[in-house]
Every structure is written in structure tokens, then in C-alpha cells.
Image 1 (tube, rainbow, N blue to C red):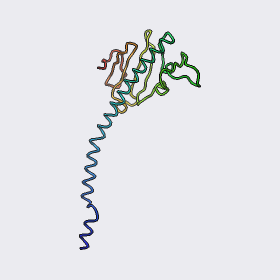
Image 2: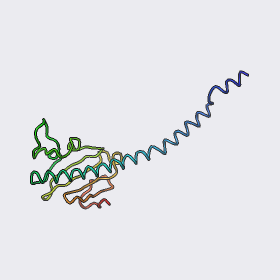
Image 3: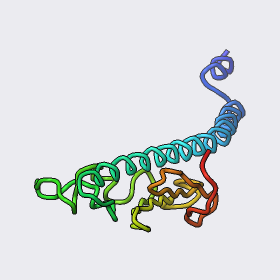
Length: 156
């Protein structure tokens, strides 16, 4: 009778090992899918941030008669001062700092317009694509680690 009570008190070592093995199998399937979903979400957010930069550039152009040549020109002014050509207050401070959502953003001047590049901080982890756009608002993408250019395929 004592041995029967002992068997009913808990799980055997084999039962615990089976449960642990099942949990590990579930984790090995779920983690890569989660990471892939997160990478896709970051890339989608980057495309939206580029649209925000385009809108900010249009506002900057209508206010100051030229395109901004850097993100800081589109960002908020420091010290509570009023918006001005060096800080137009058209995008938030995080995007104006250049790194958002695992991507590094840059804005540069080109042929009377501007160019936007967005590259993952750590390629393959933060994102699997690089992006380029300019005043034409056409989004180009590159599936390699090298930055996308105007000659990269258009995003469809």
C-alpha cells in the first residue's frame, strides 16, 4: 500500500523528459517564425517612415523653397525655439536622430532634390532589405546587405 501512494504523488522522470522534449520542439518551430514576423513588421514600419519623410520634405519645400538635406532639418527644434530651416519640426525626434525600429535612415541632397536611404543596423537580424527613395516617391529595395540605390528594383 505504501508503494501505491508513492506512485500517485508525482510524475516519473520519463514523463517529465517527454514534456520538456515537446516544449523544446514547439520552441524550435515558433521562434524562427516569430523572428521572421518581427523582421517583416520592422520593414513595413520602415516603408511607412519613408512615406513620412516624403510628406515632411514636401512641407519643408513649401515652407522654405528647397528640400531638406538632412533629417535634422526635418526634425524638431532644440530648446523650445520656433521651427526654422535648420529644424522644421515635421518629423519626430526619434526619426530625426536617424535610427528607428532597427534601421538607420539618412537623407541627402541630390540633383535639386533629396534621397532617402534606410538600412538595417544589423543586416539579417533587424531587417533583410535595404531601401532607397527620392523626390519621385518611388521606393526601391535591395535584398542584399549593400544599400539600395535608384537602380535597385522597385518595391511592388
